[in-house]
Length: 397
Image 1 (cartoon, rainbow, N blue to C red):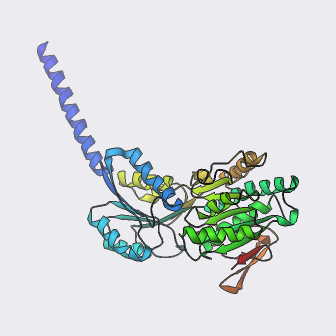
Image 2 (image 1 turned 180 degrees about the vertical axis):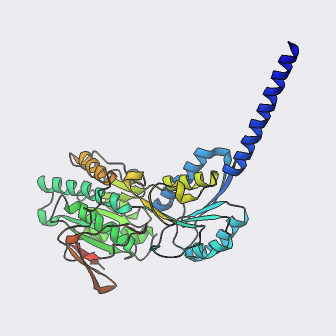
Image 3 (image 1 turned 135 degrees about the vertical axis):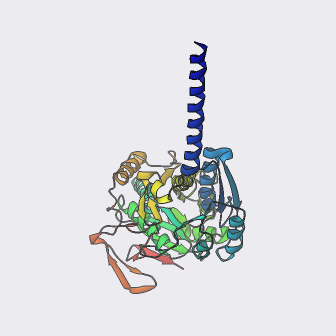
């Protein structure tokens, strides 16, 4: 009887050893125990754009803990990208994320074929040949802009009904950095969202010529407010426009619509709502892919265009934040939710559509007629709508 027990025990030990051996082999071939992840920011976390992107880094740290070592470089100008990029590569990073617009990332990627380089998209990658280890990604921001416009339109309609403004004062302002397609796409979607509620609404746009300048952005917002704009939004990187709106409340009712970050703390009285690109789904999926030794695009969920990926509300890549119920018009939450549900169902062909024409500000011969509609982000994560709509959008110098 003792021999049977001994034999059984030996058999169990052999099976256990074999199992552990197989597990180790599978672990070596099917996944990793640790990663080194690099993040490069074009600014620091005091600015809304970089703060919003840093949330993805925090999500990686929270999910993986000690399995991931994270290295971060901040305030890196596009033209100064090469040195920090090489430093992170030499430090042994397995994957590097960058939220800026430097061409250097794509140029240097072939020199480090074992490192994955993931950059927020900054140009149309459709049909372009890129290194296999170079990836671009961006949330479909126009969706959040349009929903913000709906909230703004409802507020304007309430202001008209309450006699605060007349119908001919349905004017929104937009503080913009540069007339790039990304910026134009965003402010056009915002205005069309407003006009879906208030058809007579128009927009004034003031360019700052820089992505990040508190003084210039605040000055631009003040100029728009002085011109009679009742709601201000922005595609720049500081809190300047929000502060300008908050400081104007003593004189008249105005609202601010944020992007990338809630402004309720710095502008509690004027902040209406904000939208943000959620970088977390892509960044987490990309890290997951490396942990499993898989191709990033086989794990990321979105519209896949080679090594370029985008998505909107349907994948959690865009979200609305901090609706101010004290300032919002009745029914705003319901109207926003209804439109978001359309996006989630894949119905996205209603935004850039209507009896509108527009032209490229750099090439007036390049025009568009939106009666047939326009689908944004159809083939690339970078927004390509670059037409300033005639009669309803004015560029303020």
